[in-house]
Amino acid sequence: MVQFVSWNRSGQFFRILYRGSGLGTSSKRTSTKLVANRQSSSIPSQSLLIANNMASEQQQPSSKFSFHPQTYHNFLVLDFEATCDEQLINPQEIIEFPILKLHGRTLEIESTFHTYVQPIVHPKLTSFCTKLTGIEQSMVDGKPTLPEVLQMVDDWMRDNGLLDPKVNSIFVTCGDWDLKTMLPGQCQYLGLPVPDYFKKWINLKKAYSFAMGKYPKNGLPFMISGLNLQHIGKLHSGIDDCKNIANIMKELARRGFTFKQTGSNL
Ligand code: AMP
Ligand code: MG
Ligand code: MG
Image (cartoon, helix red, strand yellow):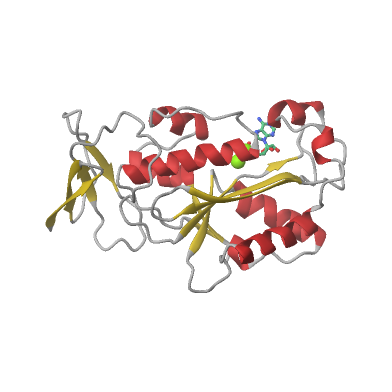
């Protein structure tokens, strides 16, 4: 099946071509960008999308307009930082807990949750950890502990309407570690239940690989350079990593990619 869709957006004319199946090859036309939606989930037609007149190699200015429809009302971008050293630390503990709430259609940041977290088992950060994450001892001392932070997150979720069953949101992380390993592991250690909303997520590395045909082995830097974006802030700062994840998502959405769940603990 081939279907043409055209619309006018900010004075630009777009034409989108959907095909029923298949993976794409790059167009030779510089003004044409191709993104293959190769996710296994429920996109009506596994689609190949070509948008003409898109300056695909340039980052578009931040915009209020909507991108290709997504299936979620909100994306919740999350990136933990945790205690670490040159050798494995056991148990690892979350020391930074940022969430960016993105509008599901514009991918704009609408609300931010951010706190540093006091580690309990290994309360003193290593110099390795401070160097890696930029998180100094004074930034975690006296901060809420993980059980308190999980209550704060729940309050923030409620305040932002994210606990309404009619609102369809999903967490987005760079890799599976945050929600598959780190949070469930620390909750198990503390004897805390993991809220259900943390039990499904989109792994941005998988989404990028579906969209661009290359798995981003080194994560954020690979995706940022692959999309010709500017890196924001410090790599391994949780809040800066979230902002970069949001920018990558926005660029993939601008190129026509539809995000789907990739992971689950349910
Ligand atoms: P990231 O989200 O990539 O910044 O990393 C999350 C956490 O993984 C960090 O806070 C560290 O606890 C751990 N981590 C990341 N990279 C390294 C590394 N090169 N060596 C040791 N631990 C790391
Ligand atoms: Mg991370
Ligand atoms: Mg990080």
